[in-house]
Image (cartoon, rainbow, N blue to C red):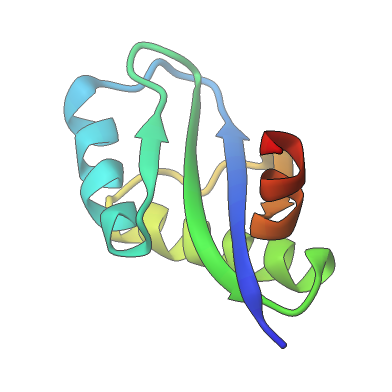
Length: 96
C-alpha cells in the first residue's frame, strides 16, 4: 500500500544559481507540494511529496520528479549529490 514520502534531492554543479532559476524550480515542484533551494549557491535542490510503497520506490519517484521539474525550470542536469526519503509513518513516530 502506497504511503506519502517526503523526498529531498540535491544536484551540484559548477556555477552559482540565480534567484530567477530557483524561482522557476520552485514553480515546477509546487505541484508535488514541493519547495526549492539554491539561490546564490552551486547546488540546487527540492523537497517534495511522492506516493510509494517503500523507500527505494520513493527515492526513485522523487528523483525522477526532481529531474523533470529541473528540466521544466531550464536548469542544467547536474549530478545528484544527495537524496533522502522520510515516510509519513517515520515522521509520525518522531513526533510522538
